[in-house]
Figure 1 (tube, one colour):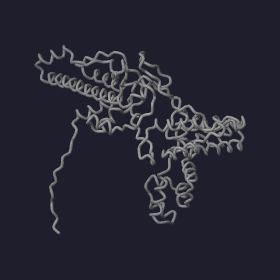
Figure 2: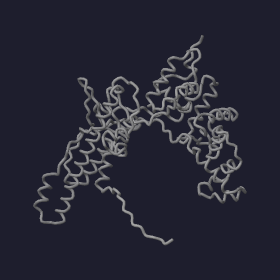
Figure 3: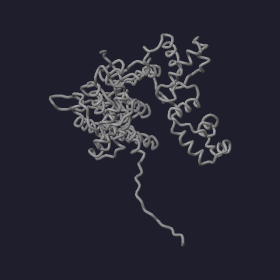
Figure 4: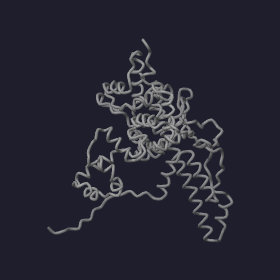
Length: 432
């Protein structure tokens, strides 16, 4: 068979530098856009940008809020590592000494979920009897997520394997002695050291990579961010008004002085420089206008689809980014970029725009996707209807939801329950 050369033609869209930068501007939130415009003004002498009020700052603890208007709305503070772990315990069931030990131990767990000091060091530093410390540490290491409150990565991974019921001798030996080789891709070296074939090592490493080396996955505490809305929904006379939070700047033009200089100068280099800066201003105006029009269209569509939710908190059906992209005749990636890290203010408060496009929860019996809000509404009804003498645990609630075709984990049930303001099973119980 003779080799042949075949020439294939294909069409490929290549974005220009201006198109790429225009998409970057579309993806900026109000604060990022403000900072971007300040940089542009510093780099372009022709840019006549009269800066007004800043759109606000995503402030963290210790920094002041620059915006003094009414649109900076505190976002919910994130739960600290210590609060997250202690919330899983029924502290009333433990002695004062044990509660104090729990508080100390959870206070030395880092954002990844690991102890910062060994149990021996903690016992000496905080003068906790070693048996008491070991007993309390054992309780904490059984909390969720699996592998939390361990001292080393090896201990964390072994705990996760134990919780999964995995007792593969080869895999356990890899975790105990060969994690460095796994990181370097030295599977053959491990196979020789353990005296097993490479296929067995490959299968074991596949299981290993499914584990979580950072149990808390960077949970941060003591944050106090401010959510700056990009889109404002206002209800007036039975109709929705959609505005953008961009009154802090208007359209801008090239400075007259430099425009005149560009026309009159005989210096070719200066003329080319000023012409380039003038073209930059025209590009920025066009990019900002496209961003503005896109966000306004998104806001109008959301006002239609989520009107009852914005007004009354009624759970909404799933409306995906793909649905919105089809409605607006845009690519889903453009919609995704446009709503990234942006917030929407409505009559009942503020929400992250992306949260309105939840992928939905699996509902096998109904063959439909249910939104997070719909699932929370089902959970609220289950708790409201339960017998107060024998309230259900989170596991029980998860099973009741599963009977309705909604498959979510116990931890997700606990999270939604807390967001709805319901206490745990024991605190909801009323004595006979």
